[in-house]
Image (tube, rainbow, N blue to C red; front, side, top):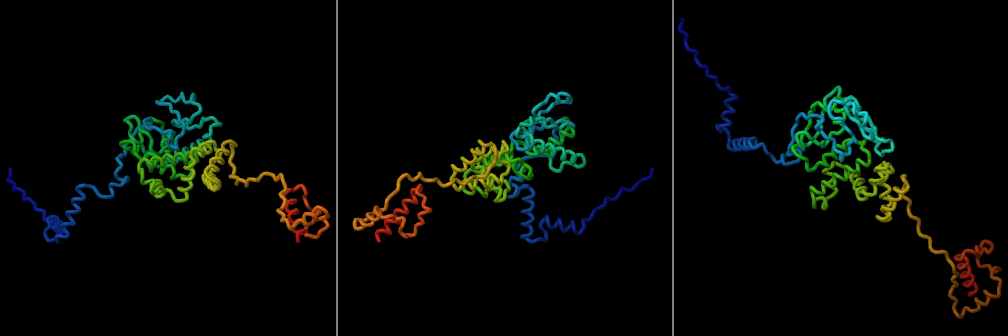
Length: 374
């Protein structure tokens, strides 16, 4: 057995760059100002905090995880909700028994609402959109995951993403797991989040749009309190990302939401722009005129423009008022009684006089007396 010499330990020398970094970190060869800057950066990295992280975009507690589709729950108070009924489990034979609803199971997406249902047409359009989305998902991944909040480990109410949910369920059923964004608790600004999500699309039906705006505004008022009263327009526009025109239209209708909402749900009013214009026209005659107009639409069951009220016509004249005659003009009265005044040339075309018109007769008598008194 031959004796081997022990290997000599290699000493790795620092490169000039590493040496420079080492000196910089130790403070050797750097100015006090640079060292202070480095210390500040280290402190910031250590705390992982900055002013911007106080904004809602960063401080909301959420995570991305996979959840069973059957555990994800559509929310009836969301404008994108469809009146769905599900068959839980693998046996889908019971779907034939489901009526007056929307059926959404693997390979089956049907509108079974009664055709008399006010939402029938809008639901049908929504289903066509969902089918189109499902076709897209066959070939590409979901860019924006469904957003939910964790109520418990088997109940995840949807915050946003109802269409994506229906499309996934239509494609794969309820017994698969999908990647979702999960809030640890129910967001305080839930309706604001929904509104922003829903208004990113232009095809929201009017009653759903009004309900979404109304819920979001109520939530903002609860969150901001007095701030909304002081600068309502700027606060709501900032929260919801609305332009001035859209804001003022929705806000005006929001003033009369109790009367407008039934009209929208019954499809009497289908255009936000049209009803806004008529409300503004009616408002020129007072708030009561607006309410009367909206209730007339409800009674008639069809949309019509606001009719400007006609001025009230006074009572029909029943008596002729004679002109006042001074005492020294008694001869004028005598001539009026004795002479045929129709022969006088005083600028009156007697053939065209309407003797049944009290106002006209009164004017003629006044003219005759004035002429005779000269």
